[in-house]
Length: 126
Image 1 (cartoon, helix red, strand yellow):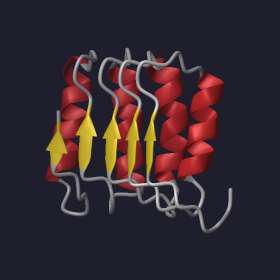
Image 2 (tube, helix red, strand yellow):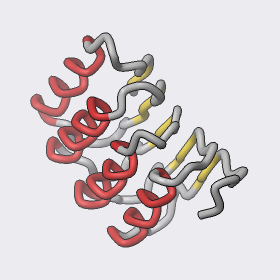
Image 3 (cartoon, helix red, strand yellow):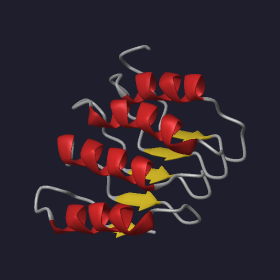
Image 4 (tube, rainbow, N blue to C red):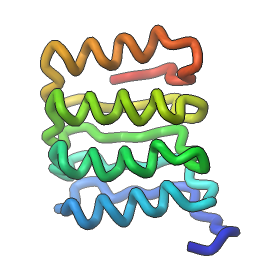
């Protein structure tokens, strides 16, 4: 990806993304871009797709501020991966939309613990 990319938003909601698609998105997140928002709502990513995206979120060059993953069939496993990624790179993401997924008790706990982390900039979780 061009090191001077002007891409600020990716809006691919309501798409049938595959794990491979998520791997490509992770590469974008790991590239030096000015990408600030990614909307993947209603994409049925499953935990496997979210784990791919988390690889990009962990990268220190990732400056994503808003991540929308509502109704993506994410369970406790995906929530755990997200919490881990945000602990690895806590400085940019401020909004995370996970409505319509199934976090289970441990997924909710993972994200509540993350909100208590003083290094984490996350302000809004839905």
